[in-house]
Length: 356
Image: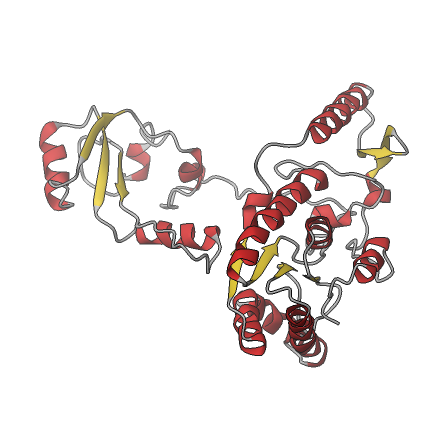
C-alpha cells in the first residue's frame, strides 16, 4: 500500500520518481543468567532487549531489489561493514509496524485507532480470571488451568527442598498472584512449604522470622517460604489504607518486595537466604491430561452453543457437567481467598506460618 501511494505521501518533494525499499537491522543484546537468581527471568530478558538499541549490529537484511549503489551507501552511513550476517531478503510484512506508520498529512492514508472491545459486565481493573465465579474449574488461553499451574509451582517447591536442606538456607519462592493467593496457597501446602504469604493476609516479618527460628531450635536448619507476588506486609497494608496515594506507593514497593523480604529475613534469622521467582514459567509448559480433557469438553460444548446461536454465554464445568452460563451472571468481584477457607485452616493445622 505504501509503495502504491508514494506519490501521495511525498508529493511535497519535487522528484520525478519514487521507490521504496525495506531494511532490517538486528543488534546484539547481552544475555547472562547468574548462578544466583536475584531477579526474575522476565526482568533479565527485558534488560537484554533494551540493550539491543545500543548493541553492535550483527544481522542486516535488505530488500533484494535495492540497487547496489544504494546498498553500499546505507552500509557505509550506518557503519555496517563489520556486520557478521548480511542477507538479501524480501519485502517487509509486519502489519503492526504498518499501522504505526507516521501520519504525514493525507488523512485518506490513516488507519483508524484499534481499541479493545469492552464487555458491559466485566471490569478492566482486575484479571478476567479473578472475575469468573460460576465455575469449579477454569481454562483460559494463554493460561493453563489451576491444576497445571499448581503442578509447576509445586514441582518448584519440591526441587528447592534439596538445595535448602543441603545448604541450610532459607529459600523464598515467588509465585504469580497479584491480587489473590490461590497458587501460592495451593502449591505451598502441596509442596510442604514452611511459610506461605498471601495478598489476603498481611504478614509481619518478625512473625515469619520467629517461625523460622523455631524450626532451627527443633533441628530443622532450612525453611521454604512461598510468597504470592502481591503479598504485602502489615506496614504496606497500613500505607495502602491510610495514605492518600497509598495504592500507588504499595504497587511501587511490590517491585522489590521479595528481595527486601529476603534481606530482612537474613538479618532477623542469621540464615543465608535466596530467592527464586517463577514468573511466567507458570503460564507455559505442558498441560496435565485432566486439563486437556476439560479443554476439549469445554470447546466442543462451546461449538454446539455457537451453532445454536446461543451467544453471551461461558461454558462452565459444574457438578460433573458442562453447562452454558450467561456472562452477566459470572462477572463479579475478585475471588479472594476467604479467611476461613478450608485450605487456610488446613495450613494452620499443619503448622504452616501465614505471617500473622
